[in-house]
Length: 365
Image 1 (spheres, rainbow, N blue to C red):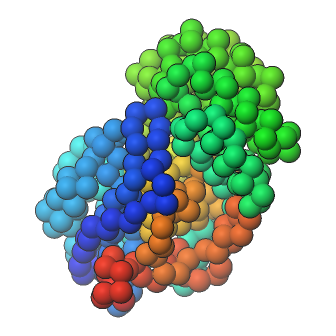
Image 2: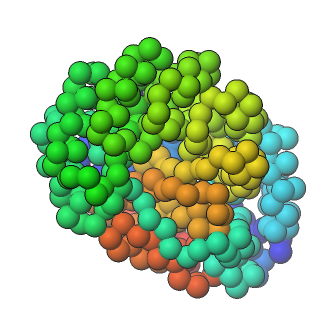
């Protein structure tokens, strides 16, 4: 089915409260929404954040690359030829993975809609429900403990806690959170590259008594030897995030036995097509994966939900960012109850439209 047109729009949605991690604070979700139109009258919808501190992409660069570089090269191609289109995109511009991911998501949505299948079935059909964690941004220990208790009462069974700013305070944060929620809620940590290897080993060993499920990216992304040292030195499983962008990164991490798990993010790797490659090579090594997110709307969260539901080896999900938003501009898609995404049998991702102007005309039809 021929691609007839590709459109992009910028959307800004205020968050309920500022969200702080080791390398910055965010108060607004700024995303690009992509519509890929097919000759059969259907439209595939995708999106992305501008994760400048992770991939180097900005909203302006994403929009420019899609409008001026990718769209002219792929309009007129068959939307179901996703491997070919991926090769075309990689052949005309390197990196720019967030831009490529947004187009990739829209292509998969369009392909699944054209086939009359929900996307998760097209990707493997392993299950149709997915449990996500909820992430606590960095704050005072007492505030984080109170929020953790509220989230437990809402039905969340796994909390992801941002750390990596002040080691002493990080330990106090986890101690207070565990005291508040008891032992029946999992705690996973994300240091966002905030520690040095020896520091990470010391902190993680100290925190082992609080029953930590895993620690994500404890050291800088480039320090693979340091990451491997941490992994060898602690009992808590270590997960790569910023250290794994590409299939080649995943292969290197596996060969070096540098981590126990890999966090796949669509804007980071370039979309669903490449995410599948990473998940499959991890599976071949007996390594499980998680699917995570940036500060995104459900236009790009839901493709990641479908990916995780399609693939057996993706055993964990951190797909909560749309829950931070004051309003949801996305119409259609999965329902969420007690931290559980429930996918319907609607074709594609289920997203019908994205309202970028509040009550004004919508992006797509």
